[in-house]
Image (tube, rainbow over the protein chains, first blue to last red):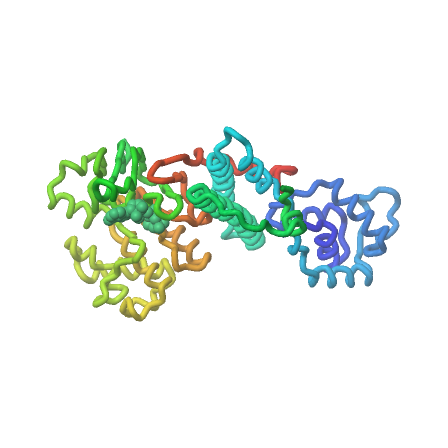
Amino acid sequence: MSVRHALLALLSEEPKYGLKLRQEFEAQTGEVWPLNVGQVYTTLQRLERDGLIESDDAGEDERQKTFRITSGGEAELANWLRTPPDLSLPPRDELVIKILVALHLPGVNVHDVIQLHRRYVVELMQQWTRLKEEEADSDLGFALAVDAELFRLDSVVRWLDTADGRLKRASAEPPTETSSPRPRLRRRVGINR
Amino acid sequence: MSFLELRNVSKAYGTGSAEVHALANIDLSVDRGALVAVMGPSGSGKSTLLTIAGTLEEPTDGEVTIGGSAVGTMSRNEKARLRRRTIGYVFQDFNLLPGLTAAENVSLPLELDGMRTRRAHAAGMAALEELGIGDRATHYPDELSGGERQRVAIARAVVGERHLLLADEPSGALDSANGEAVMRTILAACHRGVAAVVVTHDAQLASWADRVVFLRDGHVVDQTMPPQSTESLLTPGQSQ
Ligand SMILES: Nc1ncnc2c1ncn2[C@@H]1O[C@H](COP(=O)(O)OP(=O)(O)OP(=O)(O)O)[C@@H](O)[C@H]1O
Ligand SMILES: [Mg+2]
């Protein structure tokens, strides 16, 4: 989540105080991403340094300052909204690495490890769903953010299910020797051997 | 004692070398008001568990009790009445009657149980409306989309005064918004005191349940812990 750009977006409505920005940020993201005051002011300082916002000079106390977006800030915001996030490189997912390690450790049942993580993720999903059930009707931003979280966790469960099935089939019919994928590709998806 | 109880239930199909152990030593209790989800890979025994819990098949071993009565000692008539009155089913392939409209499919079980046609129809319509397909009430099953048929099947299962709801992949053909509507409908039934078991491989649906039970090769291998406080989700530094 880019706090920088979220603050720019809030300032593109009208000039605001730092505390108001924090309040609005949390309200708009359904309080899914809490933000501390320090974070807000550090980010504002950097934005000002980069010429994307400016403040009226109300002395040293940051709390008294009103911040406004500059034309450079407007351009940066418009550009950011339309730039796709980098989804092309697979993240070095800690869970993937754990399962790959479990696969090669003697005395470890990889299916048990998979189930342990599956249960943990489903429990997390239960908590999010409970929040959605209780509060989402009244808050659209919150519902959208929770949906995104649920889809992300859901994809983890699906990967675990697929891994479980693939490993079960592989142990039923041991692999015949085939050429392994090209080293560079293997590195790219995070497999070292 | 819970409303639905399976004690040490096993089920084998076939004999000799063709024998398949679909379920092994299953213990499962579902209270009234509780929603339990069963997850597991294809062939792990989910549908078998539901048909046995719904008295449609007999276990090879073990005991099923519903509302305190042991199913194994019931007469055919008693079981038939239990299925008609107490249990609502949503089957994996919906099982709608082709000669009846959506509304008639939903109200039929109520009428079979002696309710006046007009009242049964009103109850059926209300259930269809809740699932967003009131405007399809006069359509026949072959005039409905897969997702609409599915919702008719759910309406039929929750209508009336059922105490036990058994649903097999109730959202198979539905997009996620309608899947959510289905789970909200099932949850509303639970809040009225229904005990529900939902079989699914969709973790988002399962996450509506109070408890998720994981099946593997006919065994219960794991289940989620009772719901924790949601506070931890909102603590700074915890979110990924
Ligand atoms: N009538 C039957 N005769 C023989 N074997 C059966 C019968 N019904 C189910 N089985 C077997 O029992 C096992 C469990 O089947 P079941 O239908 O309960 O699986 P499931 O978990 O519901 O799978 P899916 O997710 O594919 O619906 C499978 O191996 C299946 O082939
Ligand atoms: Mg099945």
